[in-house]
Structures are given as structure tokens and as C-alpha cells.
Length: 341
Image (cartoon, rainbow, N blue to C red; front, side):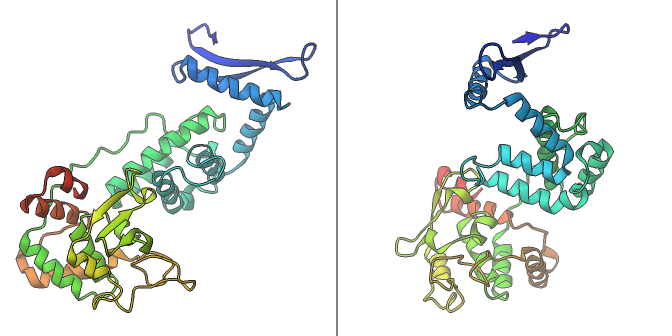
């Protein structure tokens, strides 16, 4: 570990390629504070392992930095995801968080900044992008800031950019937690309104309300997760927000909605051409159902017709709280209903 005149300390690894008599080289591992001594030793051991395999690690890092500098923002971002969000051996996403974050950049950032040189991206430019996103969705704007901050921090630490444009750029403040719960009258109106939708959204929204699970979890439901005989639906850990698989008990009504032989589902529940288990709610058998925004707009129109002046705006996520509230009213213990809140 070496320190500067200002007192900052950094960890380095020193090595020779070819043994004694060859030039000694040094490569920075990281700063003290950002790394603990144990972490620095572990990283140094990994780098020296490469040296033992005749890899010039300092030159390798120099080449990586040059590659990052020469590429576009999209190239830089993909390198960031490969280094942090994917498993080294398989290339699979480490979690749903990383996959969804990548999808957000593809949709909101790449069309605007994708082809730009990273060093040419300015703080006002990023602030404008975040504020524009905020006008449509406050939560997405926060997620965007929370994604760009570590990405540019990684790029700066890697030497790919000369300065970090995210430094000092404030994150949008969190919105107040919602506590909207649909009333019994609203739930009755919702049930009538979604029934008019027909397949697949009539069943999707009813299952959302009956199970209290997240929209993405219901929309992405697969046959392999459902056991109608046992009345259970086990959501795979890769599809859960907390990364842990959990089993949902299906009420008789929810099970009926999923029964391929029942009146509500047949004959529209699809399996792929090979007969393998696939998405339950799908119009193709290969991709999950989509188009929630337009569907909800139609449902709102019908609910307004039913409720009149009593109609209040609601979000799909509010159905989770409505389910939890209903469970509590029926006497379920908090640890049972909390999965729907």
C-alpha cells in the first residue's frame, strides 16, 4: 500500500514477467477505504494468478481502458453489465434486477445517448434526461438515476472517462408511499369491468386480485409453476423481486380461472408447438401477455360508467393492498398476508 502527500492510500500489486532480471511492473488494485486489506489481498492474489499464466495484467488493463474509451456509451454500458450484472461462466443475469435495469437503459437511454462518446456526455444532458423521465414517471426517474450513478462511477474508476458527470447530480426525492385500497364497491365494479375484457386480461386481473401477486409475476406465469391438483402456484426465484421462490395457495376461484378444462380458460390457454409447458397468459404461447396500459384505460372507462362520481383513480399495484386488506379481514395472520402488500 502506498500513500500520496495528501494522505490518500492505495493498494498496488507488483510483479515481473520472466523472473529476476526482467522489468518490475506495478498495477493499482484500488483505494484504501473503497477496499479493505482483505479484499485488496484477494484481488492481488487473483492478478498474480494471471501473471503466473504469463499475462501482463497492467498491459491488459491498459488495453481494456483504451477499448472503453474508443467505444460508444452503449459499448461502455454493455461492458459494465458484463462485469457486474452477469455471471462470468454462463453470461446469465445475476438477478432480475440487472435484467430489468438493462431493459430500462435499452428503452430510455440508448436511443438518446447510445451512440455518443462517453467523455462527451455532460451533466446537464443527464439532468435533462432524468427530468424528462420524471415528467412521465417519478419512480422510473429515480431508478434511472440509481442506475447511471454507479455506471458512470465504474467508468470513471476504470479510466474510461476523464470526469464523472453524475457527481453532484441529485436523485429525485422518493414519492410518498401509497396506501390506496379499493373498497368493496370498487372491487365489485372492477370485477364487472374486467369480465367484459374477455381473454386474457379478464383472467389476469382477476388472478391479480385473488392472489395479491405482482403484475409481472402473474403475466409471466408458466404452466410448470402451477399445480392445480394441489391448488398451488410456485413462482420461480428468478421471477421474484426478492430473488426467493415462494408458493401461493390458489383459492377455488383462482384455480378455476387457470383450469384448462374449465369454462373460463378453455380453449385459449396455449402450449407451444412441441407441447412443452409455456406461458399461461399469452396470445402466442411464446411470450407473456402485454398491453396493460391500454387495457386498464378501457377498464377505467367501464368502472366510471358503473361508479359514476364515486370513481377514484387507481393503479394495478393497488390490487396487492386490496388483497392483503381482504385477507386481514378474513382473519389471516400478518405473516401470511404480507406477501400481498
